[in-house]
Image 1 (cartoon, rainbow, N blue to C red):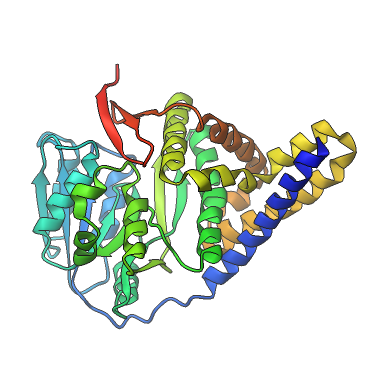
Image 2 (image 1 turned 180 degrees about the vertical axis):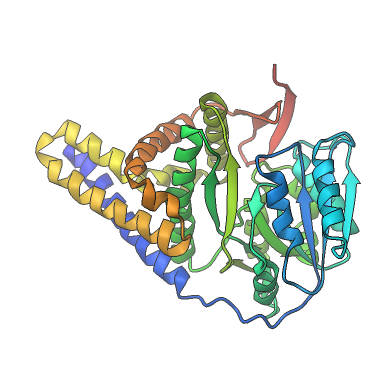
Length: 378
């Protein structure tokens, strides 16, 4: 068995080193000087009352930027999110705000339908699309607009620092995984592929003509991971795709065990369909389970577990602290091995099944990453 686990463990060690190098490579890019004041349209799809919704949205109203508007869209007129929008609108009367009631979407991805309606109505070419659970500081728009100022950038993804809600152990573990494993993978892809060929959804900026050139929202709406596909198609068309130098906060809220597990299983299944080869390669992103399996097959290899733990800790620190400035992983470092084992279990589970639940509805994932509605959840 050591002939099996030995090469796997060596590959995982190499991957840890690559994560450290990738974090350093990302940090070498300098934040642009704020030379651009191009008008920006912020697109905000809404659905219900997320934890901390008002605090999240207020950070976008409080941008230190001369020219921007905020567009909001939700499915129903009686959605409680509208009361939050109206309070902020009265608190910041100088910020242009427009709201849209979309009704039922004509395709499975309701978020994309909201974005398509808002983009058609947006006054500006530069669009910042951001989920309702994102929190920023006043410099966000200035940084992003400057990154588009050179004329080469078509799509930009903001890395995020996941912040769990209070009282949920499972959301805490998920945030630790996002801030170490997930962003370690994304940064490594940027290094190995010598550029960015994807986007990540919580906060993405793009030019309107780029979205139209890659097929528009009618095409993107067919995919569950429409953000990933947007970056992939834009890169294939020759547009510049970047990881922004600006890191946002992603407040993932509080979830009980079963909803959290369903969410993580959906994520793994959709990732498997979006990039199947990359999903298989995720085995190397989880070195601790591989090292434990090696010890079970050959107990004398226990020093390898010690070395693996050191490498994993160094990689986690390089990503979560050096890049994301995440205090959570520094404070709760001892939970990283627990999260790694749980993440490995969900990775294995992600190979099975092609259905997901999302906001009370059931969908079937197709082989090419598209998905289709199958009915409402009971």
